[in-house]
Length: 255
View 1 (cartoon, rainbow, N blue to C red):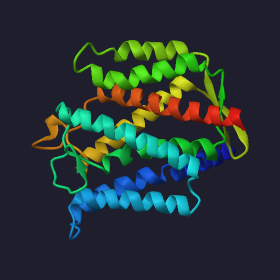
View 2 (tube, rainbow, N blue to C red; view 1 turned 120 degrees about the horizontal axis):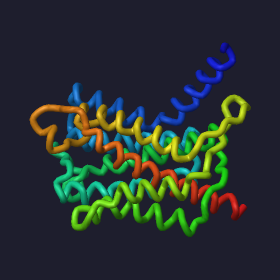
View 3 (tube, rainbow, N blue to C red; view 1 turned 30 degrees about the horizontal axis):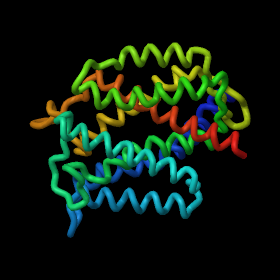
View 4 (tube, rainbow, N blue to C red; view 1 turned 180 degrees about the vertical axis):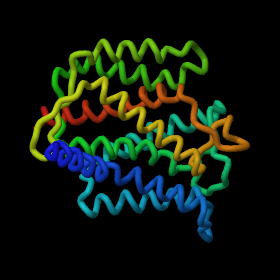
């Protein structure tokens, strides 16, 4: 029991270190909500803080240049999704800001980038290896379909549940190996998707409470984010994981 507790604490420490970027974002959201900063709007300060944090992590060696490229890609993917969703009225950023594009503050892309940062950090710290990973011919189209469903369901049917079923079928045999303090563990990929998606839903509730963005039902007062959003975050986590996994796999085979 003592050894299991030690392993759990070590695993928790590695997870906490992997979450450094997201933690800074949440801390900044909380601080800027209650402590007004001079000269610039809140959204602008959040953008500057995220940029500074990204620069510091690279200079301190907490992130590699390759990881920075992945995180930048996620920033752009996330920003494109944010612009579309805000335009469609799914949520809003009601506060003023100079660093806004089509009503979306640029700091919002860092919230997606922070998910990529966590995945990259955890991948390296826990020595993640993929087992029975399906072919790229299955992974890439599936990831693309999941991402574009966030757009096309506004004009056509929402096929998220069919995509979720496809994920289970494609990744049924796949699992992830990871090390905790030198000891190997294994987890089914589908279970890891669900766990990460659930914790991001919890983080979303914290973020909306501190005014990171606002859903229509939160216009007058904050309320819990609908449980249905877990499916959205689950699919977004799957896209994030698949992109990171494929980039890691391609880089590994090219070395």
